[in-house]
Image 1: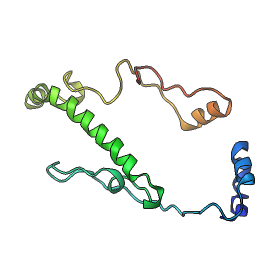
Image 2 (image 1 turned 90 degrees about the horizontal axis):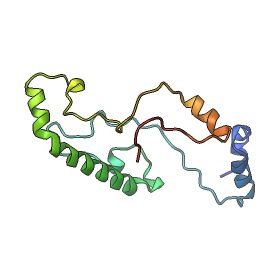
Image 3 (image 1 turned 135 degrees about the horizontal axis):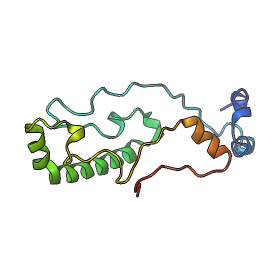
Length: 144
């Protein structure tokens, strides 16, 4: 990769990245062009018997070598969801059959950690905090 390609955006980069580029020997960085790829509208088959994971579910280039890692993470997430879902399945079905709205059914767990209270946020605030050396706060709740 030609180091001059970074000159237009380099002033905005962190000093450590500028130093890394300066110390990198010429012609040792391969510039893989990334392309935006729209994700699939659904990651499961019509009857939810097949679920896409890894490269087929996430927009990564094969050369990024992230597919297997993403597939493992997806599989663990899916297994965790199934484990939780099986425990609550009958209770959830009872509420659904009774017409209880999903967001009002106490048997259906929310998609956030216990104790979480939503607070408005913006990525610009997080970036400002990071630039000021502050730690990123995930908000209330048990995020472990």
